[in-house]
Amino acid sequence: MTTILHVSDTHLGNRQYGSDVRRDDFTNAFEAAIDRAVSENVDAVIHTGDLFHRRTPSLPVVTECIQILRKLADADIPFYGIVGNHDRKMDEQWLDLIRETGTAERLERTPTMVTDDVALYGIDAVTKPAWEATDFTLDEPDNPDAFCLLGLHQLFEPPVPEFLADHDLQEVLDRVNIDIDALALGDYHQTESALIDSVPAWYAGSTERCATDEIDPRTVSLLEIEDGELDRRELELDTREFVSIRIGFDEEDSHGYARDQIARHRLDDKVAIVTLAGERTPVTSSDVYEMVVDNGAAVCKVDDRRGRTQFDPDDGPQGAIQSADKLIEEKLAEQNLSEISTAVEDRIRTDDDLSTNEIDDVIEEMIQDAQTDAFADLDDTDDDEVSEQ
Image (cartoon, rainbow, N blue to C red; front, side):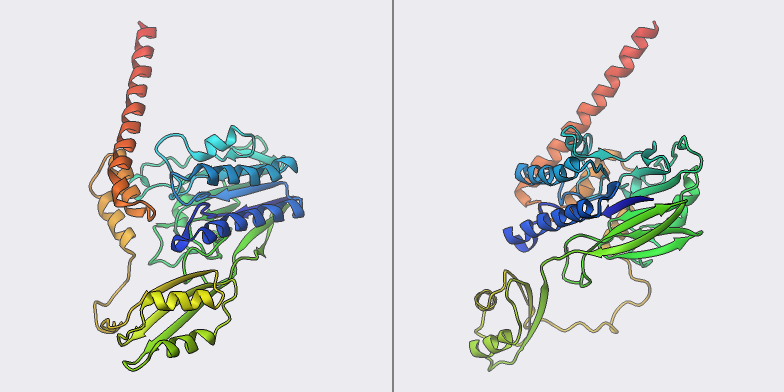
């Protein structure tokens, strides 16, 4: 039997709600997943993208990641990964740097043999404009009977609901040139699974909650492969609890009312997401924040919606709903933009941690990197022509 732990969307360095506590939570969740791999004595760990939360993680975050991965190296357990949309760079990837420390390897279109009977493949996250031109050709494993597992980082339907998905997963099976036995997926933060032409596909989910609507426990997937058959089970991680509090205010409600509403909840060491609704009062969002922290919450986020017009979901456009990002990427795909143009657009649109003051520097850096790569390719071509002459 070959055992593999599937981990995804760890988003290391994510200072969720601007909190250092939450940044440490993401690190701790990743370490818990790696500790589980060691305790289960698996043959390998695969990571299907978004190892880091942003393309420019801080040096301490990268160092912590390597230190955690050394636990696997010390246990002779290899760590294999692909690049997600959050941590994707123009040229060399962070996985390439970490590989130099001997603690990680990057999955590619050539087979990586975990054992003689299991071959791993990986395709990094692909931007929507580049999807049609992307090569999905995979090399055959030396063992024709090997179990072939492909890792991808995209939103696919199924298992993702159609209105959230970017692509049909059946298309991937149609475009690869070998028989795939299983698809390990990343990018969707909930645990979901489906069968496509009898091929099992699943999302392991994120190791920490990246949004307030990610209610289910965080998990990793333990894969057991024997005689060409796959058995998968979810292993729950112990992560910080979230508590949602809604406080509806009337005009006469004061600080005492807010304290009473907060006191009804057990907040010790939890993340508290507080929504203020109803009428405007002298109680400020800062007042509520302090009350929540005083009641023991480790992290607090207050969303003050008082005085806003209530939205009626039945009073508006009808029909299929699509995400804004999906609509933008569909329009960009029609423009035939250059790779650097789409990369810059994707970076500015999706990097939540990028400040306004950083945008010019980021664009300049990305363009300079692209120019360097382009001239390097040109120099290589010139050298080849001179050699032929």
